[in-house]
Length: 248
Ligand SMILES: Nc1ncnc2c1ncn2[C@@H]1O[C@H](COP(=O)(O)OP(=O)(O)OP(=O)(O)O)[C@@H](O)[C@H]1O
Ligand SMILES: [Mg+2]
Image (cartoon, rainbow, N blue to C red; front, top):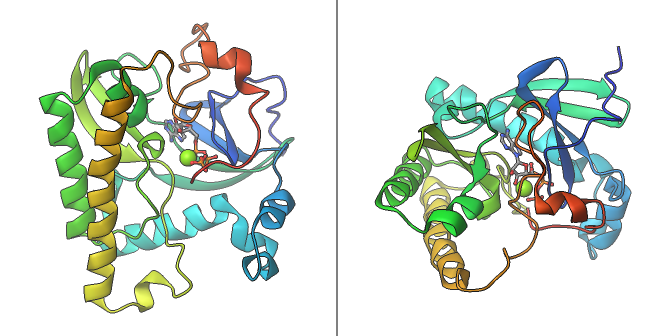
């Protein structure tokens, strides 16, 4: 059966994917490839020799599905404290979609990104603790990831102003030519330590931008908060015009 997404407004979009609330399961998210930036477009945008790779090697959904299953097999259920659960694929009228856990706050609103949280609240003590917990987990479990970007981490709040956990919803896996698990453990650990150190740097960079009037870029803003009749954001007015590849 093909699930119809046309007519549903995505709650967010990144450089590569549109994210929808699952029309039949509000606690799930469906991610589909952006129709205006296909896998062929993505491959074309890469230089030689990367552009020789098969199309499916550029598919974020496929990679995420494999990587999350591999991590879960190694780490166990604890993996899902900080990485979102994936449930598999569904056919939609906008293409194949990856079905995953949709991270929501205590009040049902879809959780904001760390980028938006920091922009709104600054680096509260509680947020610093949550970031440290995430980084400790990343290092302890030697999680393979690309750069830990502020818009690829969401802040789940368990009650007003109370952070339950940070969850990474994109950017898992490794961009290197040699598969992560082939590397010696010392090198894997070094890579992970670099990613967590860079995350702290990114936090400081964003805090330094807080003086400016507008939110930097469109990555990290929600189009709507996923509650029935939720208000749309300013971002909504611009979202369909934003094109092109984004940092992943
Ligand atoms: N499971 C989820 N729960 C809550 N919010 C989510 C979830 N998945 C995605 N989002 C929101 O949707 C946005 C875009 O999703 P995602 O990062 O997967 O898209 P992308 O196109 O792969 O991103 P990029 O531009 O980094 O390549 C995120 O920044 C986040 O705000
Ligand atoms: Mg992303």
